[in-house]
Length: 269
Ligand code: A2P
Image (cartoon, rainbow, N blue to C red):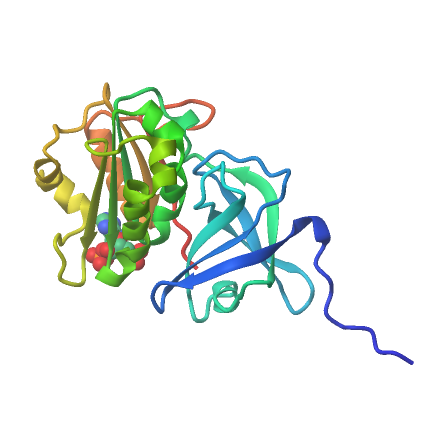
């Protein structure tokens, strides 16, 4: 008598293969996977991804796609939570492993949810930079706006590395320059830390409220005619930034009714 393998096979249409894994800190990693040929998405959207549990059922979480819509592969950027149901296991994936990916992209951090404007602010904390890593590699972003400003706030300097490398790549890679054009004067990057010394210390909300951000960038205050914003961070950050944006006259948009800013919660564990 032969013993059947007790591990259930993945349901094939939703299995994708891991092609690359990078560990940025002991709390952060990114990985790339194959892309289902039929998957179409708008840069900035998220999908459900995960692994099979011991009982053979899928354990899925919402993850922003960090790669742009033209990329052959998909990229994700994740926190590692040691007792997190998914990330405690997901952090150990290796190239060649399979993950589950439900090919139903959704989300509000998309160009369609914003009214036309001149300046686009991308406010991220922690892994909230993921949807912006997608949007910043999409030519539509620089075709639509005269100026794009990414702020990224993390507790420690090492947590800024993923974003810093992304920005360096956008500015210096030949293929990116061909795709996006000359970004000098068009793209600003504003990294800050809150719990470790760095060139710029402070929560982005405080740097906004006291005018430091505008002074550092040499730009005028927000206005609903010119400025559009996308926000992706913790619940607290999202709530606080919404209040600031609203106080400047910007209104929240959605796919069904575009506005001046959009918000989504960053993946937390
Ligand atoms: P802080 O260190 O002062 O809490 P987290 O890892 O907790 O999501 O935090 C990521 C970054 O977002 C940290 O630098 C944190 O600052 C900042 N942050 C958290 N909550 C808020 C908030 N309500 N407003 C502004 N920044 C926030």
